[in-house]
Amino acid sequence: MRCFVTGVAGFIGSHLAERLLADGHEVIGVDALINYYPRFIKERNLEGPRSWECFRFVEGDLLTLDLSSLLAGVAWVFHQAAQAGVRGGWGSDFPRYEQQNIVATERLLDAVHQAGVVQRFIYASSSSVYGDATVLPISESLMPCPISNYGVTKLTGEHLCHSYSHEFAVPTVALRYFTVYGARQRPDMAFHKFFRAILNRQPLTIYGDGTQTRDFTHVSDIVEANVRAASSPTAVGKVLNIAGGSRVSLLEATQILRELTDLPVEIVYSEKQPGDVLHTFADTSLAAEFLGYRPRVSLREGLADEFAWIRSLWERA
Image 1 (cartoon, rainbow, N blue to C red):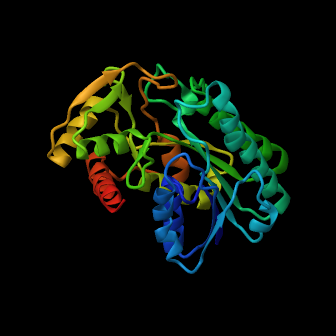
Image 2 (cartoon, rainbow, N blue to C red):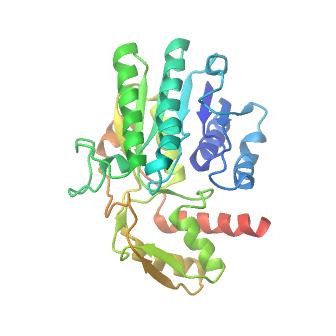
């Protein structure tokens, strides 16, 4: 299959591209390489995909690229690109989220519709669409109520997928990711920040009291869900939770970091940030039903993998 991956230089996109290439597919990867975090990290993320002859990288913005020519012959589209961060997107920062997460998604969906040959459009959504859910585990039947503007834009993207699916039969699948971690995690994400602070003998900053819980999901499980969504005929039109299968508090997670690094860990506490939710824990029974999805990587195993990568990244830098 010829595949089209947006955000290919990013955390999830680069892993997904490598998996598709290893499975024997051709990949066209697009990334704007915006300066949200250092370019050298994105360039390193691309080293794996670029080692394959059947990989083509296009640096450009989905808002301005000629998408019709790029989509020629493409069977599967994996839309991973977005302006990330639940703590951003407020006030004057919102237009950036609006353009990258809503307008770009609509433009890509329209190009897929016009192409008329795409067999699957996989949309990377987020657990942030649920907001501060009070019923756990969270199932897809719960009405979304985001408390971050990032979550608002990701939910709008889901609605756009539904519109194009309903009106033009674009075969969409929306995957709601729950707190993804692992090698290549963005520098603004918690575990990356925590590991780097530990290596630099600096305290870890936790927003809130540390009792907030997350359903941490390893990036390889996210990639597996994407691949399965592309080939499952029963997944078309569905919105599915993709999660790691366990609910862990931040304080419990920091204890694992202590054990993995064998280094002292000092914690300082700060006020809860706008957009942060208290708890996430997913019901993934629909993903199991329609994708055969089951998370395979434990938190300890996944964090060991991420720590090795972060240590290598910053030593090399």
